[in-house]
Image (cartoon, rainbow, N blue to C red; front, top):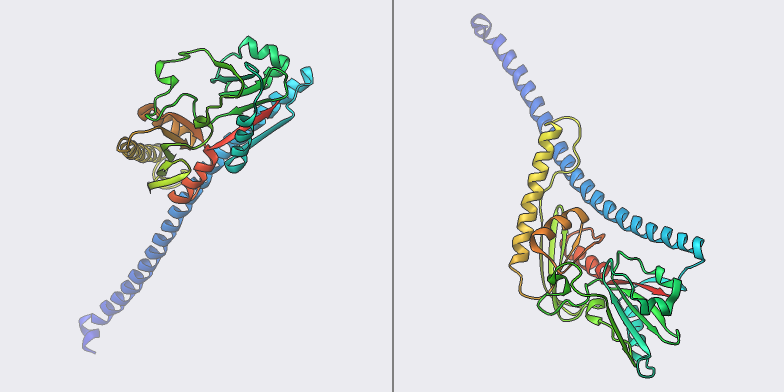
Length: 321
């Protein structure tokens, strides 16, 4: 009665309504916060998948282009290799061991090392004839052929031939410092350090949102560490503008690359191989000047991704003439 006379009943009803409305808004806010967190997680997962697919597409496009060129050569001159394969690990070592065990008379075994863009020497053309066109000119090659054409193979090494234990190679002397290496002997002279993981070196994996670095002694990993960075995924409608979104994303990637650069600068001496997502690898390579780079398809957390990158990088293409 007193509440009604003083107008308290109306106020109490209003307070109850406002409290109910506040509770409803609180629950809505909490649900929206959870939704946004789930959306952010989904965006990051989508970006990682996008990065993986982009690298895989680049690899498949490269393989498709090689097949098209091989098919074009076959159409023009009926040329195709007796075998074209990708080897690593034990299978690659077996092939190298067989080539190194080959022996002939003096000056009967020819080894030619070609860098990307190098023109095969006339000696090699004389032996292989038109089949020398099976060597793609944008790839490095180690060619082993004997004067009787009993053996004729080429291997595309992942590491530039001539890189020494301190990480210095022929490329340090400038573009095209020396002509292709050519050597006759009674055995093939394979640069195994360019084909197989030997000695101490660093392999670094870089994606827009991940960095992983391992120090190796041959195939054995001596140490490793890595980190992930928060990088925004693809922009969707709503929220801030496309321009602001891109600026934030570019800033996050730039910070990630700076952190990755510092990690590489702190490593010990020895060759450094930088692999991963093509665009960010090329950007960081301009700052740290690695001894070799490659686009590889490595997803997941730093440790398993680095293991995948190691296997992909040390994979060699084999061509049997």
